Length: 414
Ligand SMILES: *Cc1c(COP(=O)(O)O)cnc(C)c1O
Image (tube, rainbow, N blue to C red; front, side, top):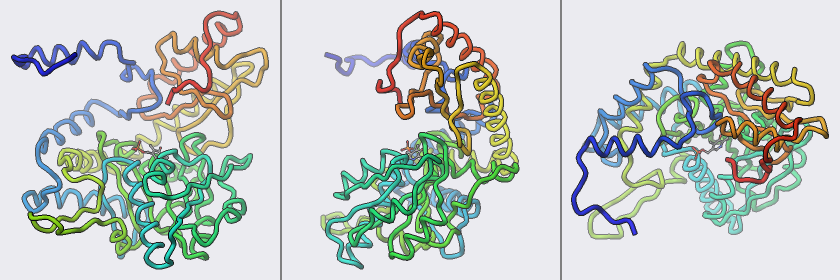
């Protein structure tokens, strides 16, 4: 059994050990992953690290002690609101990640419906392409999650979702975009439906929030999804994804700041005095806020546009290269830097292609439906786009030659 060492190790030995442990990890710096990380350049990396370290031990629960963190957090929220359609009445909450932002949105929707409409057996209606973290939150909050199949266009079907709503529905969900396909749901239509029934409308822009507005400015067709769309109640956007901040940074934005109160906890039922929080966390890392503020302030609109351009260029190179390989197809549509490719040749087993790529060190994201391979690009992939296409080509050659093992679609590869 591992125990706390009787005698601690010196600093150098600790760092050497940590580096040693990393040796078996996949090399994201070589672009071998298309999931879990975001990287633009050395300069941004240094800004993130130094900003985080500047607040490495400050606790963001203690804003009375650290007005610095309060002002940084308020500016992060204000910058995001201005990017994502917020108005004068809007507000937001800085959270630890997309899962917490979504948890708070569902908790608020449930509490509001419980208070105003006396709903006791709440349900939410969402497309089956929505992130599974909605189901996790629903389970914890005593909410039934009603998943409705997306249509052949890979977008939420508004009529099908309307048909699953009833008097106990507390929220509708749409993604901007979803993770499995990278497609936007029809947010204006879903939000109008939610408004007509007096239901909370949550837009999950965890992955798209800090990318889609810039991809749109580059001239791509990105449908409206922001807080300014009539009927939208809340929107989640992860700063630790395309906001290019280190992990532990997401936002839950609300069109009307008064709706934040539905996910607030407040009590004085102990000896120590009043306690209140809008998040599920108590102690919160000050470094996460400082680094998020630093990333946004360092990049500016120019930097985010650069990220958007690199991602869309990488996507163009990869999708053109992959679709030129006989037997492969890019699943359409896909609106941002997420896409799926698959085999359309019965003699070409995508599981074998996946295993051959894995053997070369690529971390393959296996899509279970349709049976394929999933990619989620970040700016670093522009450098490795041609390498990736060449690797796909070699893997297809190996699979056609019948070499190697196969990687099933239901292996846990998320
Ligand atoms: C990443 C993601 C989430 C969950 O966010 P975490 O930060 O991983 O908790 C939710 N929805 C979408 C669309 C995502 O891409």
